[in-house]
Structure formats: C-alpha cells, structure tokens
Amino acid sequence: MIDVSREDLERCKSVVGKAFESQGISITDEQLEAITKDIMGISFSHGGGYSSDIILGFTKGYIDHGLYGSNMEEEIFDTVDENGQPTGKTVTRSQAHAEGIRHRTAHIWVVRDNRDKTEVLLQKRALNKDSFPGRYDTSSAGHIQAGDEPLESAVRELSEELGIQANPDDLHFVGTFPIQYEKEFHGKPFKDNEIAFVYVYDKDVDVEKLTIQKEELDSVEWFDLEEVYQACQPPRDEKFCVPMGGLEIVRNYIKREE
Picture (spheres, rainbow, N blue to C red):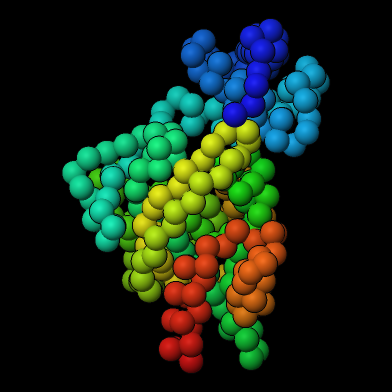
C-alpha cells in the first residue's frame, strides 16, 4: 500500500473535487475520497508524485474515461467452486480481489487465418486497469456478474469492449481454466482467484471498424499465435499478460481444427 499523509490526501481531494465540479458531476464525500485514492495510486505507480498539475491531469483522464462510475456502483460476483459452479453466495469485486475469493470470468479469443498461420487479436490494457496496466491480453475478457451465465457474459464483453455484435452461436466454447496469483498494482495488493470460461470467435473482423472501450483498453493488434505462445514461455516477455491456461486451450483447439 502507498503511504499517503492526510495533508496530501486532503490537498489532492480538493484538486479532484474541483475537476469534477467543473464538469457538473456530483459525487459524495465518500466517493471523492475513494476516487482520489485511486488517482493517487495511479500517479504513484507511474512515478508522477502528487503535485496539483499531475493529479489534475490524471483526474481529467479519469473523468474522460468514465472511471468514476466504478466507485459509485460496485460489481457483484457469484462465488464459485473449483469447477466454476456458483455456490449460492455473492461477493463484491473489491472484496473478491482483496481476499482472493474465487469467482468467474469470460475470456474471448478473436482469431483469424492469415496465409499459413493463425493470428490472435490482443488488446492492450488501459493504464488505469486494476491489474496488468498497459500490457497485451486476451482479445476480450470480463467478470461474470452475479446471476449471469458465461456465454451471455462473453457476448456482452465482445460488444462492450470491441463493438463486435456476435450471436451466441458465433462463439465456440473451448474449456475452462483456473487463474490464481497475488501481485501489487497501483500500490495496492491484488489477489486473483478465478475460473475462466474460454470462447473462440473466428468471424471476419476489421480492426479499423472496431469501437473499442477506452476505459478498458488502449488499442488492439493482431499477433501470430505461435509467436505469442513462445513469448509467454519462461522467462515471459513482460509486454504480454496473456494467461497461459487460456493460450494453451485455444492453441490446442486450433490444432484440432486444422
């Protein structure tokens, strides 16, 4: 955790509060403090410090990307067993990642044939993401909300993150795998414990026509599947945060389909 003095916090809260007021956005004192701590954590992780100009710059980006909404209505997940089946209990996103409580995610891999090789579309995660900011990841992925099914979540994530309007039949379910790790991002501990449901989407995709969700990702790029697989072997190329479990499932599926 970053060590923030009360004086720095109050000064930064004043800067953040005025920025929100100038945009006509009303937030509670509790939301203001949570948002300010988020912004200070992002600034700290990028070596920016807490000067008013730097905090104001990060705040403008925070507002432009609509990130303040995450502090107003927190996501709720089903807790699940080792097979990804709901237990009947729920947990908030922050609690799941603070305590490492198992939940579900949907991972969608967009693939295409390019001459004699298979390529995968990877997203470059936004710098404000709570884990692995600025790294290349699965084409589209997201948490499965409480009460939702993996397939409907996968269809929704493709639409929200990339603007791809897929039908459920367009997605090929290829398996599940566990993800479990503990790291620190933006100066805060992060414990992930999830069961990922993996889907492949192989319809034609024109990257130039995609509508990407800027608060989730910065850009997308095609990569050779085998090159990504080799780059993710130890020692891993740090520009990728693609989970090996999902990469192996998709790679095996592609080989079976050849």
